[in-house]
Length: 375
Image 1 (tube, one colour):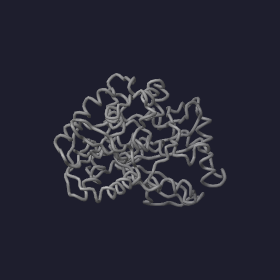
Image 2 (cartoon, rainbow, N blue to C red):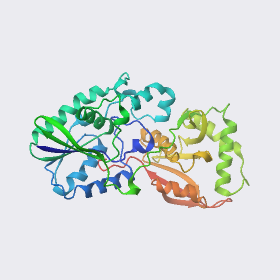
Image 3 (spheres, rainbow, N blue to C red):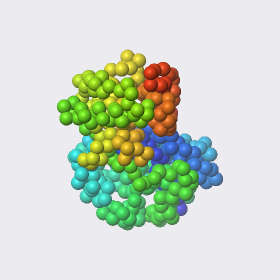
Image 4 (cartoon, rainbow, N blue to C red):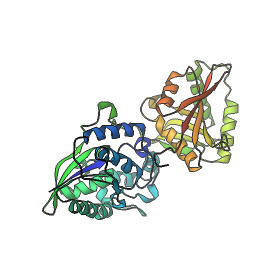
């Protein structure tokens, strides 16, 4: 009999930023790294004989937790990758829900029926991943093995092993990050001892699955959205400084208009379906020669603050500036704006400078982009 611990990777950027990952090879979040440490403790006393993983970074890094205590190499196999979602790769859920509502519904509730030109189907995923898992089991007869893969791929594998149709998606939820399913291979068949067990995670390492709204972004229209832009900037100023003394909207709006001339997607208005949710203004030119990107304004409507939405706006900045090869992201925040400062510190920004002004001290904050263990 062979025992296989089938594990989903730790929280990756796409999970946190509400993006479709698929084969998109993003990084692992700070929370994901904590989850990996807790997964490693789970496997401290389990005598594994081999460790396998998808060749995507988030799976390889997670697999190191299982391999750590035995000094085992992580063997990679692209057949264990996540479903390839074709034209949806690296795109944001909010945008996709708005553009492809029915297709997204099928992807979540009836993945067996989901079809997208240029993407794999769930049958395709099972067709490559199940033989790979079976080959691992045969190769390690009588041994214990850890295999790290991805949410949809594991769902497809368990669908076949448990004989639960993917049409019954509610009976077979996506595994949580670093959750473990123990499979036993005997007489040419798999059986499940348990599935989707994440009891190794501490409470603070668990993700609240009452997810924030998936926000969609639309390029700001200078003609139609001027009043909204100026109202957002005024509210941000008031929140940072306590009043509107010294605030004049015209220079900020004209700067935003200039950003849009350089890149039509540099200033985005965000919506929760049709309800306004916030604004992001990126300066495409500032910092370009020095290798950093600049956020001129990140604003959320009061109803969306403190609910995990702000990181979705940051993710748009990461996406745009990473694609241009920028190495860092910078912004100013008022020293006495404790709420905003705490948010940016949680998201990995650090203070690298400051400047005085008539309305208080501004802190210059920076976050490195694209830093990975294998970079």
